[in-house]
Length: 296
Image (cartoon, rainbow, N blue to C red; front, side):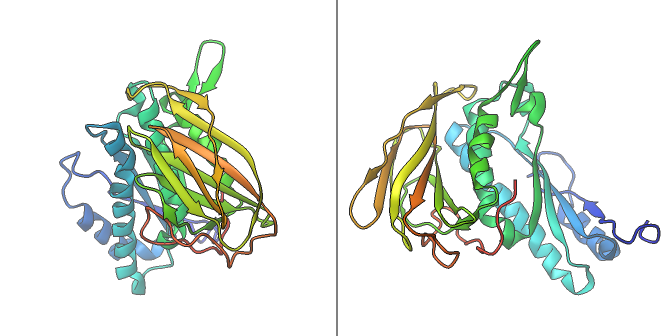
């Protein structure tokens, strides 16, 4: 194939992220054997992840922070361990979803899990060399509900729509009092706008307080928020309001109700360069490079 077209890219497929669901032992052995015997033929490795819903919506929502991140880290460690004999390789996280989502009504449970996974990818993609990621499966199985004569976004689809604001922007570090909430911020390519997305996966409200450093805020712009209609996993979302309270020294705070998503845009008084940022990402334990803009 390469003799015919030396520009092609080949992606290896293997077993990762099943977390013991199927009795297929030797996942690590399969991966190592494949890479050891044929790694030089591949430019990337395909990773799949289906998380079994847990006993609560909240535990299911944050599971990607351990399961997905752990699986991607294990795969990256395996590739790095064999790197002396391999071509440079990236990862395609080309199937991810909650297990069996296609056989139930996707609601707040799937939306929270998707939002946390997207935040995880925004933060960790550079470090873990994740070149692409694909939610499985948007049509009829999570993000788009197809009716006899119309189609509409499900709660998962609304989350995707909300977080596309980060596409083409630069990830920034974050610090503040966030409790169990998951916060991610990005600055626009021209440095004039800071977009902050906040997720509350818990069944009680959470106050988030954070400090914007490196630039002053000229004004708080558009804010979009969604709340769960109920605490049932299949619950739909409803649009909701959110109040951003500003105190001295560029500190802002918001109260996020239970099972809630919010996105807030700040217009900066001066462009924020890539050398400035928030100062710590609250949930991820590592920080993304600011050198590469996020892609849709």
